[in-house]
Length: 225
Ligand code: SF4
Image (cartoon, rainbow, N blue to C red; front, top):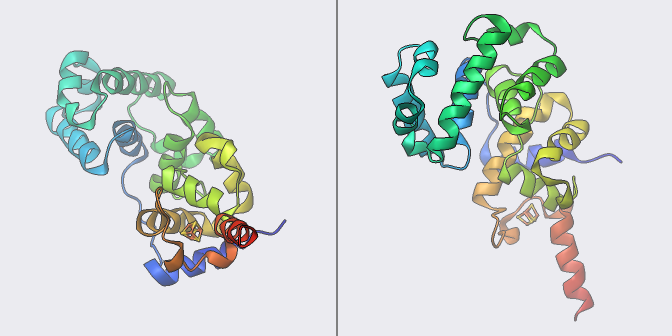
């Protein structure tokens, strides 16, 4: 089945503009920030990341810090008692693999191998791996957050029952590589502005013709008339 991915992206970019990919951080910086961003807002995770980098001049200093001290440092990111030992475990695993605190060598690997290594790190799931590959390395990998997942299943591109973790592979199978980053950004913008979790504003949406959720609602309201 051919999915109208290019049309969906074009409609949304008419509304929100075309995003330009630029590397945000090194792969390791992106990974550590991703751990801090789990289950909290961007503002809180950026604050926690800034405090971590201000307090510890090197990644070795993060590993050597008492875990309670590290947790106190990143407290503003939430779940600090889980995230502090996870950060230390991830840093130790990276050092054990390559003898240095760096993931820059991932640039030399094909995407499946780079993803496999990231997923082998303690506590790192498909979304964090995808964030590193997409945002830091420019690979055609789609991070599936709550907005990307919700808008994708409402459009009928994936079943809701799939869940966010398995949606990574399913969406990558149907989105053309050159559109992966643009699709990701467009759906996040749309999920925040119009296709909200509660009460999507379908009357303002340019995707109604493509949308299974909207068209099912129309069909059921016609049947009940
Ligand atoms: S038509 Fe409604 S449910 Fe479908 S994508 Fe647009 S806002 Fe979301």
